[in-house]
Image (cartoon, rainbow, N blue to C red; front, side, top):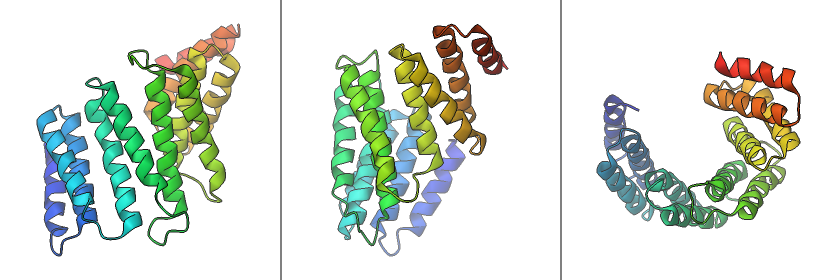
Length: 234
Protein backbone atom coordinates (compact mmCIF):
# COMPACT_ATOMS: atom_id res chain seq x y z
CA UNK A 1 0.00 0.00 0.00
CA UNK A 2 1.36 3.44 -0.94
CA UNK A 3 0.68 7.03 0.16
CA UNK A 4 -1.16 7.48 -3.17
CA UNK A 5 -3.43 4.55 -2.27
CA UNK A 6 -4.23 6.16 1.08
CA UNK A 7 -5.07 9.36 -0.77
CA UNK A 8 -7.51 7.44 -2.95
CA UNK A 9 -9.18 6.04 0.18
CA UNK A 10 -9.47 9.58 1.62
CA UNK A 11 -11.12 10.73 -1.61
CA UNK A 12 -13.59 7.84 -1.28
CA UNK A 13 -14.33 8.89 2.30
CA UNK A 14 -15.69 12.23 1.07
CA UNK A 15 -18.08 10.33 -1.19
CA UNK A 16 -19.33 8.30 1.78
CA UNK A 17 -19.82 11.41 3.88
CA UNK A 18 -22.99 12.70 2.22
CA UNK A 19 -25.38 11.41 3.41
CA UNK A 20 -23.76 9.81 6.45
CA UNK A 21 -22.96 6.26 5.37
CA UNK A 22 -21.39 4.99 8.57
CA UNK A 23 -20.72 1.51 7.20
CA UNK A 24 -18.67 2.93 4.34
CA UNK A 25 -16.90 5.44 6.59
CA UNK A 26 -15.97 2.70 9.06
CA UNK A 27 -14.67 0.47 6.26
CA UNK A 28 -12.59 3.28 4.77
CA UNK A 29 -11.00 4.17 8.13
CA UNK A 30 -10.27 0.49 8.80
CA UNK A 31 -8.61 0.10 5.39
CA UNK A 32 -6.61 3.25 5.92
CA UNK A 33 -5.52 2.02 9.35
CA UNK A 34 -4.24 -1.20 7.78
CA UNK A 35 -2.42 0.81 5.10
CA UNK A 36 -0.70 3.06 7.65
CA UNK A 37 0.32 -0.05 9.61
CA UNK A 38 1.96 -1.53 6.50
CA UNK A 39 3.86 1.74 5.98
CA UNK A 40 5.08 1.77 9.60
CA UNK A 41 3.01 4.86 10.48
CA UNK A 42 1.71 3.31 13.68
CA UNK A 43 0.25 6.36 15.44
CA UNK A 44 -1.81 7.21 12.35
CA UNK A 45 -2.82 3.56 12.05
CA UNK A 46 -4.22 3.39 15.58
CA UNK A 47 -6.16 6.65 15.12
CA UNK A 48 -7.82 5.30 11.98
CA UNK A 49 -8.74 2.01 13.64
CA UNK A 50 -10.27 3.91 16.56
CA UNK A 51 -12.24 6.13 14.14
CA UNK A 52 -13.47 2.99 12.34
CA UNK A 53 -14.73 1.65 15.66
CA UNK A 54 -16.62 4.89 16.40
CA UNK A 55 -18.30 4.98 12.98
CA UNK A 56 -19.18 1.30 13.31
CA UNK A 57 -21.23 1.94 16.47
CA UNK A 58 -23.50 4.30 14.50
CA UNK A 59 -24.62 1.74 11.90
CA UNK A 60 -28.38 1.34 12.33
CA UNK A 61 -28.96 -2.19 10.99
CA UNK A 62 -27.93 -4.71 13.71
CA UNK A 63 -26.48 -7.42 11.46
CA UNK A 64 -24.52 -4.89 9.40
CA UNK A 65 -23.23 -3.33 12.63
CA UNK A 66 -22.16 -6.72 14.04
CA UNK A 67 -20.38 -7.65 10.81
CA UNK A 68 -18.58 -4.33 10.58
CA UNK A 69 -17.61 -4.54 14.27
CA UNK A 70 -16.18 -8.00 13.65
CA UNK A 71 -14.20 -6.69 10.68
CA UNK A 72 -12.90 -3.63 12.56
CA UNK A 73 -11.70 -5.69 15.53
CA UNK A 74 -10.16 -8.28 13.19
CA UNK A 75 -8.26 -5.57 11.30
CA UNK A 76 -6.91 -4.13 14.55
CA UNK A 77 -4.99 -7.30 15.44
CA UNK A 78 -2.02 -6.71 13.06
CA UNK A 79 -1.38 -3.38 14.82
CA UNK A 80 -0.89 -5.22 18.13
CA UNK A 81 1.17 -8.05 16.62
CA UNK A 82 4.61 -8.01 18.30
CA UNK A 83 3.28 -5.37 20.72
CA UNK A 84 0.81 -7.21 22.90
CA UNK A 85 -0.23 -10.87 22.65
CA UNK A 86 -3.03 -10.08 25.10
CA UNK A 87 -4.48 -7.37 22.83
CA UNK A 88 -4.24 -9.65 19.77
CA UNK A 89 -6.22 -12.32 21.60
CA UNK A 90 -8.67 -9.75 22.99
CA UNK A 91 -9.56 -8.32 19.57
CA UNK A 92 -9.77 -11.71 17.87
CA UNK A 93 -12.22 -12.84 20.55
CA UNK A 94 -14.19 -9.58 20.22
CA UNK A 95 -14.30 -10.12 16.47
CA UNK A 96 -15.67 -13.63 16.94
CA UNK A 97 -18.26 -12.47 19.48
CA UNK A 98 -19.62 -9.90 17.03
CA UNK A 99 -19.83 -12.15 13.98
CA UNK A 100 -21.63 -14.85 16.00
CA UNK A 101 -24.39 -12.32 16.78
CA UNK A 102 -25.35 -12.16 13.08
CA UNK A 103 -28.55 -14.03 12.25
CA UNK A 104 -27.90 -17.01 9.97
CA UNK A 105 -30.94 -15.93 7.94
CA UNK A 106 -29.93 -12.27 7.84
CA UNK A 107 -31.26 -10.24 4.91
CA UNK A 108 -28.22 -7.94 5.16
CA UNK A 109 -25.30 -10.37 5.60
CA UNK A 110 -25.24 -13.59 3.52
CA UNK A 111 -24.43 -16.73 5.51
CA UNK A 112 -21.38 -17.34 3.28
CA UNK A 113 -20.00 -13.95 4.29
CA UNK A 114 -20.52 -14.67 7.99
CA UNK A 115 -18.90 -18.10 7.69
CA UNK A 116 -15.93 -16.72 5.74
CA UNK A 117 -15.32 -14.30 8.61
CA UNK A 118 -15.63 -17.07 11.21
CA UNK A 119 -13.14 -19.24 9.33
CA UNK A 120 -10.64 -16.36 9.18
CA UNK A 121 -11.02 -15.57 12.90
CA UNK A 122 -10.62 -19.19 14.01
CA UNK A 123 -7.65 -19.62 11.68
CA UNK A 124 -5.94 -16.60 13.21
CA UNK A 125 -6.70 -17.83 16.72
CA UNK A 126 -5.03 -21.10 15.71
CA UNK A 127 -2.00 -19.21 14.42
CA UNK A 128 -1.92 -17.06 17.58
CA UNK A 129 -1.84 -20.06 19.91
CA UNK A 130 0.74 -21.79 17.68
CA UNK A 131 3.18 -18.86 17.73
CA UNK A 132 6.45 -19.77 19.46
CA UNK A 133 6.89 -16.14 20.57
CA UNK A 134 3.53 -16.13 22.35
CA UNK A 135 3.87 -16.58 26.12
CA UNK A 136 0.35 -18.03 26.12
CA UNK A 137 1.29 -20.60 23.46
CA UNK A 138 -1.06 -23.58 23.59
CA UNK A 139 -0.81 -26.25 20.89
CA UNK A 140 -4.08 -27.94 21.91
CA UNK A 141 -6.01 -24.68 21.67
CA UNK A 142 -4.30 -23.97 18.37
CA UNK A 143 -5.51 -27.26 16.90
CA UNK A 144 -9.00 -26.74 18.38
CA UNK A 145 -9.41 -23.43 16.53
CA UNK A 146 -8.02 -24.85 13.28
CA UNK A 147 -10.61 -27.68 13.52
CA UNK A 148 -13.36 -25.13 14.25
CA UNK A 149 -12.35 -23.27 11.09
CA UNK A 150 -12.59 -26.49 9.06
CA UNK A 151 -16.03 -27.27 10.50
CA UNK A 152 -17.36 -23.93 9.25
CA UNK A 153 -16.99 -25.12 5.64
CA UNK A 154 -19.80 -27.63 6.21
CA UNK A 155 -22.28 -24.94 7.24
CA UNK A 156 -22.73 -23.40 3.80
CA UNK A 157 -23.92 -24.89 0.52
CA UNK A 158 -21.74 -22.45 -1.34
CA UNK A 159 -18.14 -21.79 -0.47
CA UNK A 160 -16.00 -19.35 1.43
CA UNK A 161 -13.60 -17.21 -0.57
CA UNK A 162 -10.88 -19.37 -2.21
CA UNK A 163 -8.08 -17.28 -0.69
CA UNK A 164 -9.53 -17.95 2.81
CA UNK A 165 -9.43 -21.70 2.20
CA UNK A 166 -5.90 -21.46 0.75
CA UNK A 167 -4.70 -19.52 3.81
CA UNK A 168 -6.31 -22.07 6.14
CA UNK A 169 -4.79 -25.07 4.36
CA UNK A 170 -1.39 -23.40 4.51
CA UNK A 171 -1.79 -22.67 8.23
CA UNK A 172 -2.77 -26.31 8.82
CA UNK A 173 0.19 -27.46 6.74
CA UNK A 174 2.58 -25.44 8.90
CA UNK A 175 0.85 -26.54 12.12
CA UNK A 176 1.18 -30.26 11.37
CA UNK A 177 4.73 -29.87 10.10
CA UNK A 178 5.55 -28.25 13.45
CA UNK A 179 3.94 -31.25 15.23
CA UNK A 180 5.98 -33.60 12.99
CA UNK A 181 2.74 -35.12 11.69
CA UNK A 182 4.24 -35.05 8.22
CA UNK A 183 1.47 -37.00 6.45
CA UNK A 184 -1.17 -34.45 7.47
CA UNK A 185 1.18 -31.60 6.60
CA UNK A 186 1.62 -33.09 3.13
CA UNK A 187 -2.14 -33.62 2.70
CA UNK A 188 -2.99 -30.00 3.49
CA UNK A 189 -0.02 -28.68 1.54
CA UNK A 190 -0.93 -30.60 -1.62
CA UNK A 191 -4.59 -29.53 -1.31
CA UNK A 192 -3.50 -25.93 -0.88
CA UNK A 193 -1.41 -26.07 -4.07
CA UNK A 194 -4.35 -27.53 -6.05
CA UNK A 195 -6.51 -24.55 -5.05
CA UNK A 196 -3.68 -22.06 -5.56
CA UNK A 197 -3.26 -23.10 -9.20
CA UNK A 198 -6.50 -21.35 -10.15
CA UNK A 199 -6.21 -18.49 -7.64
CA UNK A 200 -2.57 -17.36 -8.03
CA UNK A 201 -1.27 -16.62 -4.53
CA UNK A 202 2.53 -16.71 -5.00
CA UNK A 203 3.41 -16.17 -1.32
CA UNK A 204 1.32 -19.18 -0.27
CA UNK A 205 2.77 -21.25 -3.11
CA UNK A 206 6.33 -20.42 -2.02
CA UNK A 207 5.69 -21.27 1.63
CA UNK A 208 3.84 -24.41 0.56
CA UNK A 209 6.85 -25.62 -1.43
CA UNK A 210 9.20 -25.01 1.50
CA UNK A 211 7.02 -26.83 4.04
CA UNK A 212 6.36 -29.72 1.64
CA UNK A 213 10.11 -30.10 1.09
CA UNK A 214 10.59 -30.41 4.87
CA UNK A 215 7.60 -32.74 5.30
CA UNK A 216 8.62 -35.16 2.55
CA UNK A 217 12.11 -35.19 4.03
CA UNK A 218 10.47 -36.01 7.37
CA UNK A 219 8.93 -39.21 5.93
CA UNK A 220 12.14 -40.12 4.14
CA UNK A 221 10.99 -39.31 0.58
CA UNK A 222 14.15 -37.52 -0.53
CA UNK A 223 13.35 -37.27 -4.24
CA UNK A 224 9.97 -35.55 -3.69
CA UNK A 225 11.52 -33.35 -1.02
CA UNK A 226 14.17 -32.26 -3.54
CA UNK A 227 11.47 -31.54 -6.13
CA UNK A 228 9.73 -29.11 -3.82
CA UNK A 229 13.01 -27.62 -2.66
CA UNK A 230 13.90 -26.88 -6.29
CA UNK A 231 10.48 -25.30 -6.85
CA UNK A 232 10.92 -23.21 -3.71
CA UNK A 233 14.37 -21.98 -4.78
CA UNK A 234 13.16 -21.18 -8.29
